[in-house]
Length: 466
Image 1 (cartoon, helix red, strand yellow):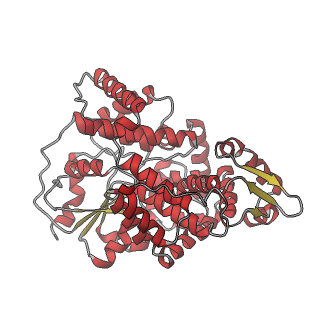
Image 2: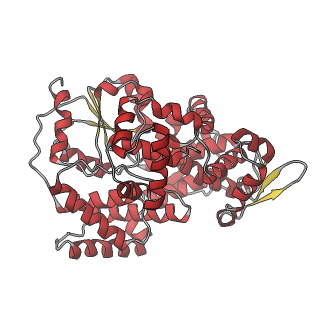
Image 3: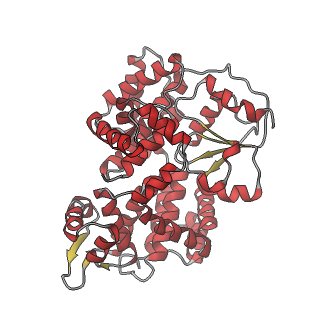
């Protein structure tokens, strides 16, 4: 039996709660038939006969998941990712050598790469066979870098669940991060862009930096283009040149992205998405018989989720969110109702976007102002891909008031640096983040969507010590 990333995703779910087969299928965006098959595999692995027993065993022996990672096999998509990472360092690669590394035949890898043809065409790229030498990725260097950026985003999102063979690339990124001072360079870029701790923006810029470093020897006419001289961007442009990390292609792309996506008006940039967001708000309002006021803030938050969702669908990027099913019916019923309405509205949506949209609407429909916690300090709220405004809403749900300096919002990219200078009494997370390397288990509190007034009780042991 092959143990794959899907098995590990189910294990991480069951580590949190006991879920039914249908709930697991919903969380992971797979069919109930597949969910049953994977659960049957886990029953054999754990020598347990029920979901509850698997949940109990994982919590009784927490290191069992890490031990099983040594037996993890690649899925077809992960094999594609692995080959693409090889292309990141060299235009010509040996497929036979890679097949030996990951334990599959050369024919299997060839078939996997054939499945990439459609996506490669979108980037005007093609993989060709050189018989004696291996295979080559053909196309303009600028298109290759855009393609690598897409797949590194996919790999970063899946990092926690990938086979151990991928650990090497993330270790390499950590080395490049220190050697080239990437962290501080990206933070400075975000300052020029006037962006406050946008994790997607940070990830995108960080990955562009690694690609530019690793592909330094592979430049052509498409990367050596004329830099657009716009006066308002002069200081930003000079900063990017001074780093000596980026080609003219990256400099133009970073500045253009900053000007359009981050400094521009979202509703003017995407008028069709504005209309779609307004339609969705009216649909949820009418279906729940609720008068939801269409504000610019609400529109922008829903538009961002829709834009990211469309991008993920186009390039087969799938995120999931571990849904909290251990809550009171007063919250569970409306949450599930809105989730069902959203699934009815969208033909395709992953559980992360589903949870984000459902909570966005719940926040606007139910404003629970009854949670009161005395003013506290030294709390770090660590986030990954959730919108900062949503995190502030979630903090209010557990009684942490905004604008009173009760807590500090820390991006996962900043957390290691933050811990070097600070010693928070409590670390709170609303996402499934891997904190294993930080040794903070005794002060870590993890929440799941949707947050309820009962969840604040998780903080009680810590509040007594603050």
